[in-house]
Image (tube, rainbow, N blue to C red):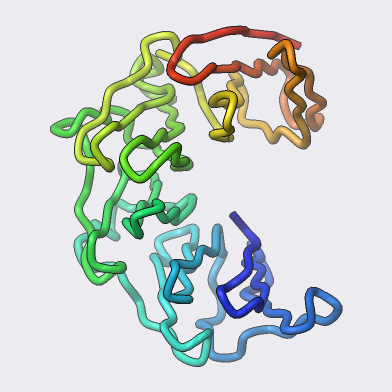
Length: 238
């Protein structure tokens, strides 16, 4: 996510082009975080239960961590293949505190608060190398949205039931260029398009039919709904 609140109530926004900003008065006023490295294109900000802050970036900038509420920052890229990494789309944190980073070069996982990272690739079941976002149903069950323009069939949604150790592609999603993904109490929803796009809003009715409005960024849009456990209940194309 580009915005979030720390355990002490401070709110942070990771702007793509304007750096990291912080509010200590519930969003009434904002100030840049002067200690954060400048000149980076940011992609997400996340917080763990200890109040540590994690920020990711596009364009080979890597990931950063603060353990003192933004006073100082450390680069945390050990184990990441930065030369091939490209963009880090998002850092996500599981309910158990495990860190995941979706990148242009597979998914990365950290068990030590970002000190070191392990690449999750074909050997663990994720064959799509462009991993966008990770979402959690529990500490053990999680989903990632992926895409592969070079080999479309390996793109789609992947699921893990062992805290991210191994993954399996959900067959119905094979070939999908999956972008946004959300896990809700009634199911898992993700956006899928032949062109990259942004869903600006979606709604789920009690009958589990799906309605949504989207931006004009793409020419064809599909929103797929997944009931929980995995049972594809609807596929609506607009």
